[in-house]
Image (cartoon, rainbow, N blue to C red; front, side):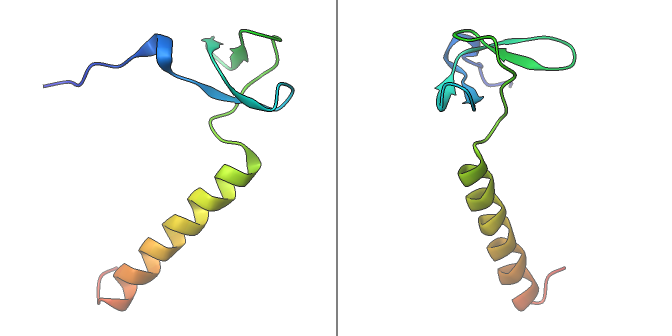
Length: 67
């Protein structure tokens, strides 16, 4: 069973607005509905935190004998 996705509630990071915003999606990029700038999935800080969490998971698995 596929979970329902709330397209209208999804948000991405707009560097120009400095916050998560609703966006319009095209084939190559997504754009902020407020200012028109290209948006990204994460802010730089959120991206660093996400990567640190992934590294911690990798280290925990590697320490437990998993690859």
